[in-house]
View (spheres, rainbow, N blue to C red):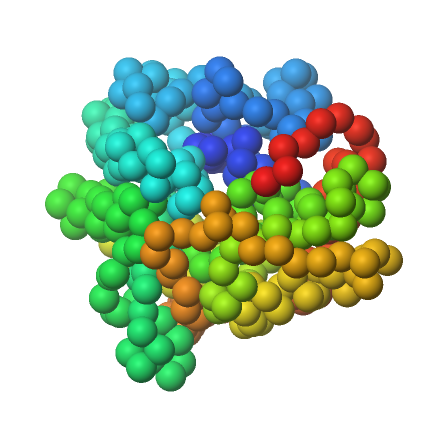
Length: 341
């Protein structure tokens, strides 16, 4: 029997890149949990595999429907689960806190309960939390080496609160039921297929639209002073693979992130430097892009994960940003209408 990996959220940026990584680097069969309405643009290149029923399979499931999750786990009986699905937009969580908490906390609980209720199923499980759990850390309290695993949680959005619950649930199921669950707090990670609600991706999208003459030469921004450490999504999914395959320790939790730190404003400058229109583009603050509270000091200490797995980020920050911009350039060139968000 082939090794089977279940990816919740396979149609998202991270899930689709993880599927790519597993296809290229393993002989595993990949099962992707999808809602019936899940957009498929991130996995369009996988549809031939799906249609031929060759190594990639899409299965219906919804984190808010426990029966669908139980049916999914019983059908697949995976060897590995990468639980990536979530309401993943912090800004949206201010408008939809209940949906965010239900999907991310109770959805994770429903999934873990489905595994626990399925006889003959004992997978290695990756529960994806977020660096947002650490929230708004004052400069004077930030450890010199960055935010480490034992820093206190101070979530600054309903999304962040939901990820605190997700994080604690993963550890609880490992400790209470002996399940092989590990939790990660991935810091900012980006690249091709990044959703346009995130700052670096909306910058890239707006630049691409300006280059094509679709919008005036103005990039709308939120808080440019927030500090971020960036990782490439392709490095991130390699980290997730190593998490579950390099001596996995149930109940452990890790910070993972890149090695390049700068302000959001510096990220915008990098993206603009790649554009032939850079001298024409103006910057304008959009109040709707500002959060009520901002987790504005996201610098990780990843020594624990690196020491355990040997993982190191490989893809340079500049390549990540150029690939992100080129991704949006290609999408804009293909035509169609876009929200100017």
